[in-house]
Image (cartoon, rainbow over all chains, first blue to last red; front, top):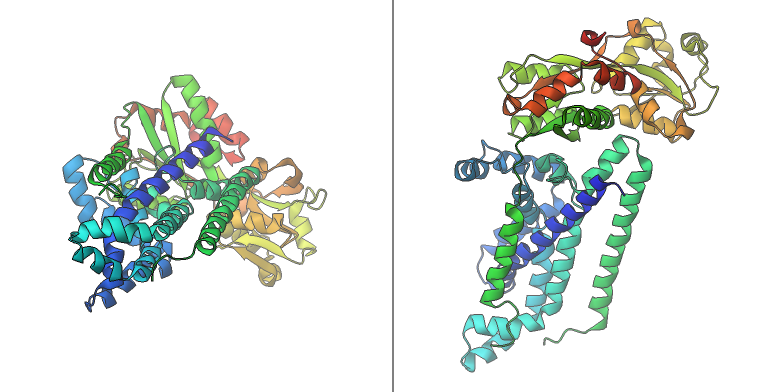
Length: 225
Length: 262
């Protein structure tokens, strides 16, 4: 394994880890709201959350590049604040990944919260628990498998990200060069041995992740009623 | 309360970790990041190593397709210089002021007719093509790729375009054209000589280097970008491309080195 490939792997794990942590924090209230709200706004929010599932990553990457670039709304403000460009930096990739992997965090959580229902929350409320208390001590533990699935899928999906990191990242070694880009570059430069080494790693990793999720969802039945 | 999964201290700790991770973008002083067209990236790596040994300056190579790198530069990507695969994009960057120097040719691509099977392509490739023994031939899309256009021009110059027009297997770029032939999709194809020299030994097979007078020169131009002005690593690396040592590396990789170093 070359130092360049090793650094791409570490950088990818860092990006996927940070994306998972941030997304669990963002997706929890969003998924809860989507699972229980009577509001008609959900007919807009729910498809908006699912959008990264169907959009070609290059479309997403293109708009993110414009948004995060120095002339864009977010990128321009960032330059004013920090003097650095947001696109082509790790921070920019992190923002892009959070948007790109959003449905992979929200959807499993939403399903889990839906199956938790509101009965337990109401029971907790009659015992004097605040909504936040009830959510933390009653609903979240019941939905723990949803959290696990969301975290694992988000992590795995971010690891395999290609189109978005190609557009927004800039393939800068040690800064924005991810595994998928390294593989692409190995293929383009005919280094098939190196491309194979990285690809087979990703293939096995993806399979193991899906197997873990499958086993987990089979073994323990849902505790909610 | 003790069963909290995400307590407030834990949340702020996570937030700290995340901002810590996001904040680690190091700013190095004597280092240049050079955007390099994919076809030249392995050669650029060799040049960067030799340049580092000679001068002590560090050059980081970021590679991609010329069009994609151009779009990124326009969006403020942190590149100090740009080694493109064509003449058009560096000229545009110079025109709009993103590049501080006029474009200069750092390498000229050599086209080759290649088959992975030894003894297929004889020394006189033009005569071989004229006998029209090839049932299929792979080329890059002439509308998208300079090497594809050069292949079309060469066949036209040999008065063979009509013969081969219906036998073409087309790749989107020169890397795809190479892959088509390597995978057996066509017995031979027009590829870059540089690809051939960089390919694994068992793929070398036989080839004919197309004479440069059969097609428009495949010039690859470089520019210094505004961000790299005054950066000794960026300016030094561009100068190194025309030094005797740099030219030797470029020639060995299968390109015609710049005229300025002959």
